[in-house]
Image 1 (tube, rainbow, N blue to C red):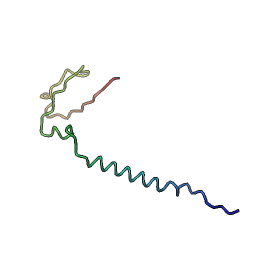
Image 2: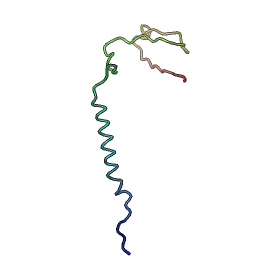
Image 3: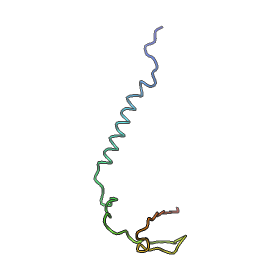
Length: 81
């Protein structure tokens, strides 16, 4: 008896993968092309940084922006919950 079809696992999924890749690329381009919102990262360019508030300070006394002027500062935010 002659088979009417043969199993081709890659052949059946190739168009699905192509469509998924095209949809992902389209979504990424739409996201990148969207104009930034009102709170974009560039909103504070050219303006002084706000004072760091909150606490408790763990490894130092509370610092002000004036004392940090001209230094490279790495800020790590922790949240519990």
